[in-house]
Image (cartoon, rainbow, N blue to C red; front, side):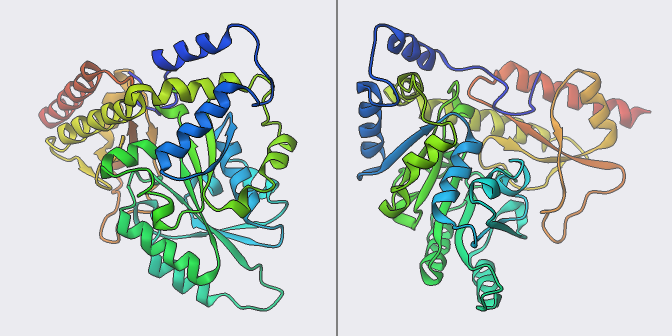
Length: 358
């Protein structure tokens, strides 16, 4: 049983079918095909306005190229200190920003508060020796599995406008947040001030399907060239675009995310019934962060259950992980099976009971 991530499963059947359909015959190369144009028009419908869309193959490429369009080499991008862009992309954003800097701020559950961002920005000296802030990047869902609410997004958007920053959203789990909030894509992005979005599909049924969605036209001007220099203008671009065709068809993307979130809720609720187990942060999407006894950690691993330990850097102030405990991350996906979730809970229950009896 593997709960290590939501990118450990393959692509969904509708996505694979769409690739097979697109594979037949010949079409124009480098994204000039009919499928790519139709999918870009579909993005316009989804976001209820005209947007610029650039297909890429990885979330790292989406984030790095998106930020490179917003931050010049002498600039500063503000993010959470545990954000994916600062911790997990091997310096790719800085590389594609040609030396621009990422500044990580603290925040519970890897979320930023508008007031904290505002205070930080106002604290920066305006002298030429200080890199000027040019963008704010947030993860939706955060690295702590939390979802920014619409009011929180609006407040961050207002801070960005006040200080002249572009607002970037890393949406690797965009749709998991979307169904959690029960809102529209427009409501969760440009209507709250988001200027540019890394739109992820790979974790939710895609094969390798990511997109940069631009709401602020000025940020789109050079992205074709930046994408080409980064090796992200794919010759058989229709096979990237086709994944989104299958992904969006009949609400498939929404159904996948609802299932993943539902499995996480089932897992979270079950773990909370066990003595000695509590959550580091609430379960709001498809990630669960329990603090468990080390004896339970050993029992789960002995049963062959895969997951990752997690950092306690962003715990609430009153919370801490004791010496006999460990904080772990469990991730569910569109392909998670309910029987596997229940099996994990059975193993956990047995492990707790066995330790209590010893």
